[in-house]
Length: 355
Ligand code: NAD
Image (cartoon, rainbow, N blue to C red; front, side):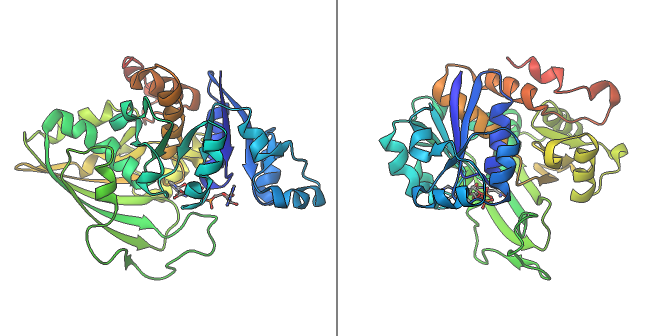
C-alpha cells in the first residue's frame, strides 16, 4: 500500500483525499489543515486523521473541540507521498519541509513549474514522473487541454492550436472572487499562461491561448480551433474522443446545453459533490472546415485534476503503466460518462481494454 498524506484540505485537497482513500493500493494516512474551520470538522466526520499543518496553531483546534492526531512533520514521517493542495505559492514554501522528510511530493498547478522535477498529466506525460521526487499536476485548464489535444495530435497531427478559455470567476465557495457583473479579459495581453503551460506536458504542440473571466462558478468553457495535418471527418473526431474515458462527448439527445445541466446530470448520477472528472465536450460542436477543427468543451475546475493526482502518485512510486494506473484510478472513482443506459453502468469497458 502506498501511504499518502494530503496537506491543505480545501477545494482540491478534500477531493484528492477522497480519491486516494478510494484506491485499492493506497492508504490515506491523514490530512493536514492550518485552521479549525468547517473543512477540518468534515474531515474528522469522514473518518480521516487530522494533523495540524502549522505547529503554532494546534491549540486553536483543541479550543474548538477538534482532536488532532499530531503535527504535519509527524504525518510526513509516516508516509511515502504527500500531495500538497495548499493555495498557489504556498506549496513552494513547503518544499523544504517535504525535502527534510524525504517524501515524494505532488504539487498543484498554482505553483510555478520549477517547484518540481516535472509537470504531469496522466494522458500526455505519465513517464516524466518516473524518476521524479516531485511532480506538479498542471492546472485544471491545462489538464483539460492536454487530454483533448494528445489524442488529436497522435491521430491527425496538430499544426497549430488556438484556444479561447472563458474561465469561471471563482469556485462556488470562493465568496470573495469575481467579477460579479462583467466579462474580463485576463490577462489582457496574449498569450495567457495556459499555452506555455501546456507545452510543459506536450512540448511539441504549437498553441496560442487567450483567456477571459466570467461571473460564473460551475465550470470553465473552452472554444477550441486546431489546424490539423490530416483533415478528418467530424465523425472520426467524435469517435476518437469518445474512446477516451476522461473525455465525455455529450450526445445531442442528452439536451445538455451548458454547465448547469452538466452539474445537474452529475448530481443525478450521485457523483460526490456533483464532480465531473471528465472534460465535457459537445459532439454537435465538432466541426471540420478544410484542415481546421472546431469544438467547445467544458472543464470542471474543482474535479478534473483529481484523477491526475492519483496517477501522479503511482507514476512516482510504482512501475505501473499509464493505462494500468488510469484504469485503476477510474474504476475506483467511477470515471467515465455516457448517456446510454446500456453503457452507463460504470467506467466504460472500452477503456478497460487499454491495459
Ligand atoms: P483552497 O483555498 O480551496 O484550499 C487550500 C487549503 O489549504 C485551505 O483549506 C487552506 O486553509 C489551506 N492552507 C493554507 N495555507 C496552508 C498551509 N501553509 N499549510 C496547510 N494548509 C494550508 O485552494 P484550492 O482551490 O484547493 O487550490 C489548491 C491548489 O490547487 C492551488 O495550487 C490551485 O491553483 C490548484 N488548483 C485549483 C483549482 C480550483 O479550481 N480550485 C483547480 C486546479 C488546481
